[in-house]
Image 1 (cartoon, rainbow, N blue to C red):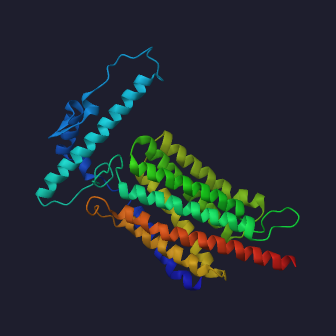
Image 2: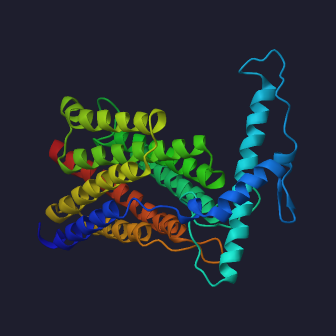
Length: 346
């Protein structure tokens, strides 16, 4: 393994730390003053000098024809959801103001730090940085597509690319953009639907990325062998997504699943980069090391600075340059494999 030993050790320690620290409770949820505030707000629609119209203007229980798909019922559910969301936000801000006056540090509410909203954006910085990551993946994939389709030579007989992993990286790009899209939506408005879409998209991306890392590291080109590699992981990922969506969204278990898949993928790329003589292995080492260090932000969490920038948002920021470098490595890999195969053909 040689020079990759330190990367492997770092990734292993990181994975262990994240697994052990994945079950953090939210102290704000059990605060009696906060719970009382939310309950009173939902009843009266008043928090101090703040009036929440969603809570005061409740719709009557009667509905046209009484059907489940009736527009009035759906609208009522949306208003009730807005009532709950706003009550939690304003009660959280009020309680944090009281705690700050007593010299106490911020605490989490429902798994999140007390962020200052901007319009409908509940976590504006994380939402914006997620959108930036989406843009980076789109531009990276577009440049990769133009490279393999129009700049690199194609096979004379089939007019297909020489690079054996072209279609796999296209799928990776779609899953990446999908994951970052739902991440930006979830950080904009945290409701049950956006939460599950965000978590499910992230799990799907991690599972597929793990498969892709194994296929590239072991240089698997035969379709039947690829299916054998992918089938167990796809079955597990699909089962896990169904579990968190339709049975129980266990945050601790989901975190452990994601950490294990990320750690195995990280180790795979680190070992492969240490063993191979790939001309762009330095870029790969940088992405692996940068990704490992960036994930420490998820482990060593801290309250949002000025109500906006927390460790999670900084993690989103760190992935932007890493994404650019990652797609640069992918393009280099396509050029390297194409050149190698053309030389062999001659």
